[in-house]
Amino acid sequence: MIELECLAAAWAMIKCRQFLEGLTTFCLVTDHKPLIPIPNEYSLDKIDNPRLLRLRLKMQRFAFTAQWVPGKLNTGSDALSRAPVDQAMTTDELAEGPPARISRTSIAGIIEGSDRETLDPILAKIQPAAMTDPVMLRLRDTVLAGFPNDKCNLPLSLRPFWTVRDRLAIDDTDGMVVVGSRVVIPKALQQNVLNELLKMQQGASKLRQRARLSVYWPHMDVDIENAVRTSDDCVSRLPSLPNEPLRPHAPATRPFEQVHADLGEWRGRQFLVIVDQYSGWPHVTMFRDCHTTARRVIDAVRAFFTAAGVPVKFWSDGGPQFIAAEFRKFVQDWGVSAGISSPHYPQSNGIAEAGVKAMKQLIKASWKSGSFDQDTFDRALLLFRNAPRAGAASPAQLIFNRPMRDSLPAHRRSFAPEWQRSADTMKNERDEPRRSKSNTSTGQPTSYHR
Image (cartoon, rainbow, N blue to C red; front, side):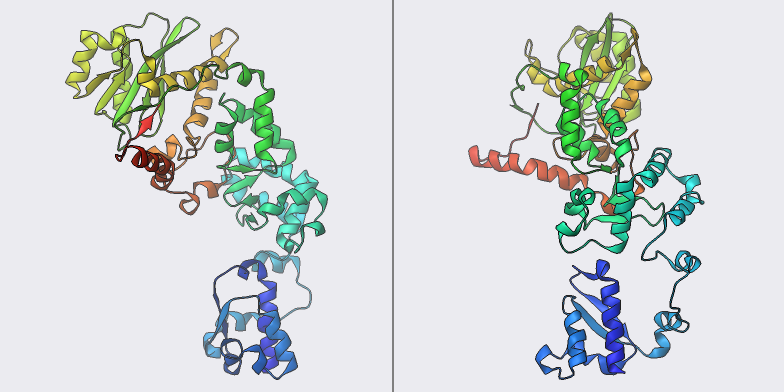
């Protein structure tokens, strides 16, 4: 009986090796008390029984502790062992849980079930494409059966997934293949995702950071860089001037504590850009013409205060609308301290200048058939707010402590708390090199921004 119980334990561990390998420890629960000392106390040289020794060697790669429970308390496994069958039926597999291999018809049935009603409409377009993609079907079978020990044993089409094999899974709710919190995009839809990303009208780094939040396919970073390089719109809007010089400035400690504002113009229409210093959250107001008065700016700023809250400091470049007596009285009545950047030196209001430059790119790309397309601009602005800043958290995560849903595919896992890194953690990781460099050179901590 000891040999049979040990055989059952070894078989169960090998069967569940995908879940057990790599764990620091787990518990083996059995109702056969004589088996407990063999894995817990006996070293291999003390096991005389050849069969027990072979079984113990099979379990050697797992880190576990055996625990005895009375048979009357071992109800779960005992109930499943009462009526074993040689060949599991399809109904048994669907009723008992995820089988070792799920047929394509079973997957299609799950997709067409009740989850279809609540599935994200953008994700719903991915499932039919995945069901007809031979690479995705083969990848699904490999994930369920387990990856081989060597890369050379994989088919050529699946070898690009080798580096993420430990994070590949099939979501038990909608049956989609995911890499952690990111959904795997089939080949047929990858160009659509790239086209959606290009609407941000930003550089390759910004697009890669946004894509890594929710989507994945092999060589995705290279595809994004090539798409940006071959896009006439993106190439024509690349900055031709060097980066603006950094200057010391007291950093904000919370969202919307300090905001920076500036006016821009494109095709005879002016627009007001307000950027939060802490998160980089941009707010854009389009005006009908280029004759923007102080009253129009006041109305736009008041709407921003109502939506985001009243800041402590309001920075501007000292334009005529911002130094007008009417605007000064307005900010004074709202309890806001107005700051003016250095005259004829736009770099001193660098946050707003960078915001105007980024928003002008979105506005240029939203100008279609001689008129401004508000819907295209708003979709691109949503992508911009959801993209990480310089490797840190995105404006949306700093403001709401979560990503927002935009026009890119995003699996429900990407919104779950366990897949979200803390915004404070990412901000500290980004600022740590700056603080270290500042302490080394001056002995005093200094924060910088553009």
